[in-house]
Amino acid sequence: MRWALVRVCLAVTAMVVIAFAVPLGLVVKELARDRALTNAERQAAAIAPALAITTDRAELDRAMATTQAGAEGRIALLIPATAGSPAVDLGRHRVTADTLGGASAHGEAVTVRVPGGLDLIRPTAVSSGTVAVVEVYVPDGDLTRGVATAWLMLAAVALGLIITSVAIADRLGSRMIRPAVRLAGAAHRLGEGDLAVRVPEEGPAELRAAAAAFNAMADQVVQLMEAERELAADLSHRLRTPLTVLRLNTASLGDGPAADQTRAAVSQLEGEVDQIIRTAREHRTAGSVGSVGCDAAEVIRDRMAFWSALAEDEAREVRTAGADRPVRVPVGRAELAAALDAMLGNVFRHTPEGTAFAVDVHSSEEAVIVLVSDAGPGVADPAAAVRRGHGDGGQGSTGLGLDIVRRVAESTGGDVAIGRSVLGGAEIRVWLARDPRTTVPGPSGHRRPLRRRPR
Image 1 (cartoon, rainbow, N blue to C red):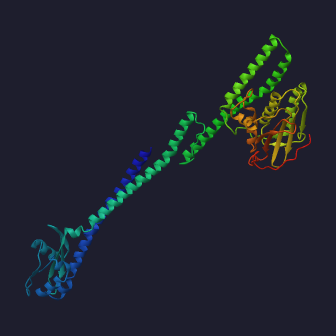
Image 2 (cartoon, rainbow, N blue to C red; image 1 turned 60 degrees about the horizontal axis):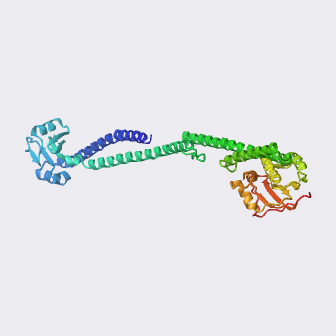
Image 3 (tube, rainbow, N blue to C red; image 1 turned 180 degrees about the horizontal axis):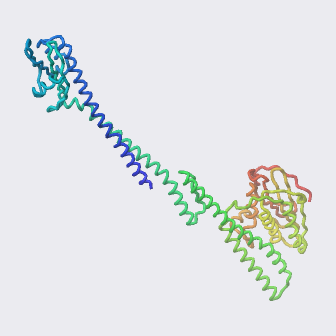
């Protein structure tokens, strides 16, 4: 397409140049000829005043010598003889006597082609009453003077126009082709699995529209794949909540082959779920948490109603504070519920029966803080516990639970911190910014202290 555009532009420019340059060159040649003949007319007219007052040979010879043509020997004069005066013949004649006689008889100026140029023959009346003939020779050099230079300049201009048009056509073609090539390359890379490829929206309007459509399609593909991976990982992780209850219930079955088989089946099921979670986790991308808002207090009350029943079976003391009034957060209900289940499930899995725990909610104009505290042994290495969300994993852990919590917090511009609770065990502190555009400082930054509500 690029070279086709160049060839078309070259052909069009060449035709335009030919259409204008050839006639212009012929006009230049004709102007040079007319200029030379006009100058010859002027040289012949310079002799007319002398012919009007005298026919003396010496006087006429001096008058001819004063002209440029006379000085160069290119002017001649013939006055026919009359009854009272002889003929006067001056200069070199280049035409025949019949031609001169004809011009004198008819009284009309004529131009005759002679070897090496043109002869201008101009009849002029003299004082003796006869008609003299002034002959001015114009060489071919005068007829074409400046024509070659003008033609050379026209050729240079024509060549410059052609080169310029070709260069412009090449640039335009390149500008048109480059976005199309990028679009084709991006489509090829997307087909090979590069989901991050995007196309700059540049070039003509049609290619910009195609690039915008391609980018929208790629974004939709990424969103669909992320949604599938999120669903596979999060649903699989949510299975761990009933599995935790099932595993705790199997502990009370006692001894026996049936009890051992049940516990083995539950353990195998947990392992399969963990494997599904890890496989999905390898392909998940950060920042895919939904941004639909929900009432955090209502979600906490709902999940605490579920976990409280299991806590009662294990003689765990449960406290909830701050969830008695609506608290809006820019997080989807399902995502926030999954994060709470991940934190509460860790309490049941990693603390002995009878260990108390609490869930507190603190809110301000800038952020909402959710605290999950327990009276267990605590977390020996909080930094490593958070890093497990990146796939380190631990014994009996998929490494995804705290990662779900972290992603929920970071989707709002917040953060997650693990520390020592007032109950003596671990405390998971989750910052949720009310405005996702506002970044809430993490545990390493400075933050406004929020007063803890009484338990």
